[in-house]
Length: 175
Image (tube, rainbow, N blue to C red; front, side):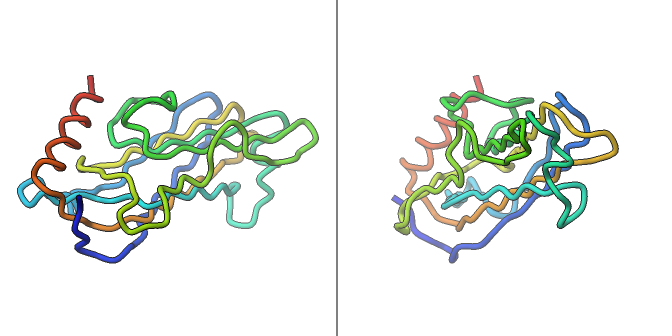
């Protein structure tokens, strides 16, 4: 289905959530990696999420607050907020919750998002951007929650039929 053009590399983006119950957005520009004319796509192998407080090394619990949670998603279409798990644009997602006693745990989500161990495994992206959306139910005053998204990917060339199928699916998901 795909011919690898590069080895695996990592793209990163950080969002800083400073307000409760308000979505925070960022983008990862893929314009240098995706080329429609050459049927070149980005193959996402895995996505990791790193949650940190206001500064590296801060106590994350003191920034989130007890009984609250942080949700982060990566999509290949701009949905303007968090999406359901069955949305075709969803590439990866994570949720971190802080219970009433200050314990942190992953909740209701698969993390990290891993698309398999083989070189042919992965999620193909033909759009020119990835969109990162973060949301927290609470942020302690004068604090922030930083979430770094690490996308492990490679560049591949797809066959004409495969590229068209992925492009059509992506366009259909936009509706």
